[in-house]
Amino acid sequence: MQTRKWMKTCRCCLLSLLAFPLMSFTVVIDAGHGGHDAGAIGKMGVKEKDLNLAVAKQLGSKISAQYPNVKVVLTRETDVFLPLQQRADIANKNHADLFISIHTNAAENRNACGAETFILGTERMEDNLDVAMRENAVMKLEEDQTVYQGFDPNSVESYILFELMQNQYMDNSLVFAELVQEQFVGTLQRANRGVRQAAFWVLLKSACPSVLVEMGFISNAAEEKWLASTEGKKGIVNGIFDAFEKYYKR
Image 1 (tube, rainbow, N blue to C red):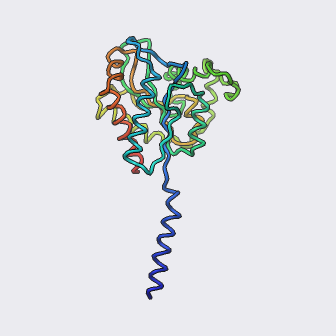
Image 2: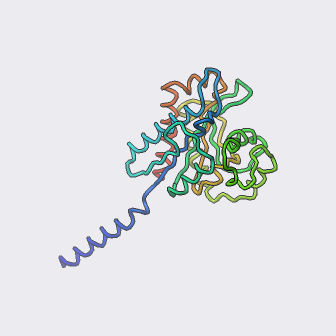
Image 3: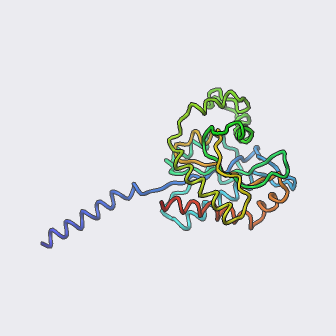
């Protein structure tokens, strides 16, 4: 009888150990731009690449501290330039369960404001083509452009390829994107520009649920000041973290 109980206990322990690897979770956090690619620059001289990196590092640290069992990978931890394809490759190499690309928006209209979160898609592609072209334009700064197989970030025709791609991760990407927007709007009281679809290369090539977060408009003087402040960055980090926590606990 005792032997049978002991065998049952051992079997349960063994099953738990075998199941553990299946419960692992990896999140890759991508700080957009970097190095000689400053991204957008505000009127106060604040550079997008610096804001993106600061938020990415703080977010990564907070997730690691609160969830030590989660593997956190940053595509860059310093002010270096990374090709778009390499950012997606990092997510794929680490078998990411979630990819978060951090960006700061800009527009010719200096009154444009608010936060928005993108997932891969072509819905209302014309409306979002300008931001997709701006974020994909970093390809032109790269020495080796052969990996993009003739894709021209400045050509409307090139974006037709996205309409032919099926994103098997769209449902979970949408879930996380909506959680992020809920935090930005409900908790941080940011103007809501919603969850939108756009043809971003890093989202297309990342084989996992993926979102691109536009934290706010650096071209808006008030938002630039808030985003550059300690309070602003802390608020953004907490908002994305809370969204991650809800998504992870699903």
